[in-house]
Image 1 (tube, helix red, strand yellow):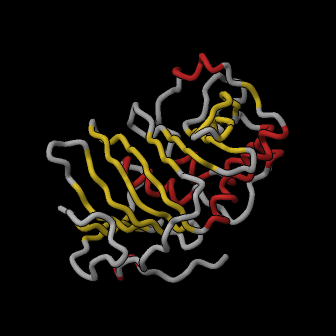
Image 2 (tube, helix red, strand yellow):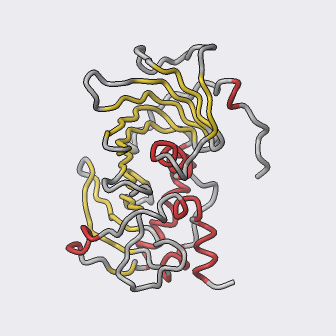
Length: 247
């Protein structure tokens, strides 16, 4: 098994969900270059440091069929579920309460109560997660995959077509901005950057994530603040319960 095949397996969930998105011509001005050893180490730690946080606050903007959905909530990267309020940019906005796992989404439509610590015990609708046909479902699954119980392989990242894009700051915190590896089969050096972006601090902490989802022109963006103030998530509705997967 060659290096690119191994890397594709390591990052497969992130690659598959964005593989059909359009080319990223807007990044040409950033003069992307291969990752240095130190940058590869930081990128390899990004999902692991997220996992070690356990639970984190997340806000995200998600383009979907000409509208923008705003997500405000929390993700439990160890328990593999998320809990959030969604609202779109319609007038008046449509709002709903959602709880999701890698397999499904439960929602309370026409929600007006914010994000309660104790969600309703009834009234939930449920559908299987459909990340390959719905931009929102794709982003929900990507948010769960931003945590991993082990670091990615830094040497494989350095040999891949992952790229440094620029240095930046988030709330005065210095970060590097990197492009994730391209879809499997895209040759290294082809000029086609991957459809994921990571803002990573000096300790390997992931502060912002972007993805260009299949069928969408605009980027979906998630903010992951470093503050450790996130409350524990309530248990998922019964419709989402499933046996714990072995590790």
